[in-house]
Image (cartoon, rainbow, N blue to C red):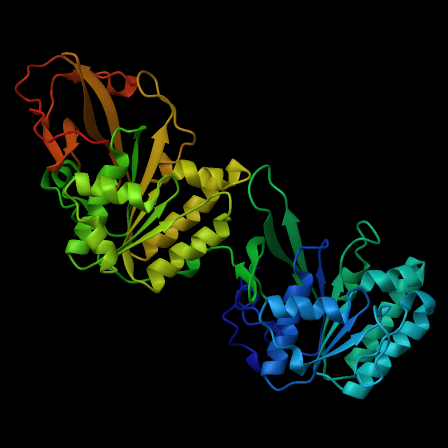
Length: 504
């Protein structure tokens, strides 16, 4: 199901306390219903549930946290590390105390192992009746399941809880750590909605967390998995990007590269709302060529965003300086935003959210992704890279952004191979190749695809040096560029004289 805008029956909705989850649900949860947050220990259930209660406290509501698994001390430690103020959260602790009971405290301390299920349930109901809260979290149902000792008795007790809360103006979130039973779906049928949280360990790098709304009765929501990240202050939820939900009116005029010969090769340049793939061997000049678009945009007063997976800012600024491109000044003026991306620490969902923020909040009109090889490393399963890139590129196109993608092929000379075929998603494909002539290694550039209009069918030599990007005239006596070993059989006259200098 896709999320609505949340405008219908908004008065019946209650915020989850998490902006990302509210977006996935199209506005939040239905009031006065029972919901289930489930996931293995460490997935983020307690953090997400506490955000739900803190939002209620901010709205002046009475909120109640009933814990059967964590102690008050543990909860306060979590709150302190998130800079949360729990003054407005009433905590009922039904776990063994670690210290002598202080009668002056308002917190109830009992031993659940010594209680029958019915008595534990009665204590919960009594405290809810006394507090009369509008939001309640019960953490966790695994303890009730153990006390019940049978699935039938457990189900009856949960149904009794649901019936009790149905007669009160109270929204309830149940937590289940999924440790007491495998594939127990009883709570799914009882609950009004179910949110699943997962923690995944990949072969290298930080663990990945994700969230999925399993069901929501009567609420349209964005299905599938959404990347999440636990950070100071709560959980960042990155709703899965759906490009069809984002449309902006724009003019499709040409975007100059700052190099007249390159624009001529492209039939006038790249139109706004299109993307170009620069493909070639390592060191052939893909990144250097891409930088021309960011600097040219800055000279026009437009903003650009560079997302670097492979190189640091210092390296890129040094190269730009060697090419005569004043990238450092553009960054200092805020016209170019440079962001180093560590694929071992960042999920694809977080990356897409950062790109959206640069476009929508910072107004970036040119986006450089260097390189797709690094982005591929961020995906635990490469099969989904194409789907992720399709949504991201479609979104950028609908925002009128010119996107430059860099993809390094395996091998330097001879047959080369790309780690993935993304050319069919690209509006334009520029192929960069090495070739040898008269004992020198030279570089050739050609446009092999351009959806949006005419382009030259020629192959041109180019050089990178102190004069920047220099593109020569068409080389007619050229063959074998698609073999990876181009052969130039013409004369010396059409070739560049080498005065551009040399840089990678």
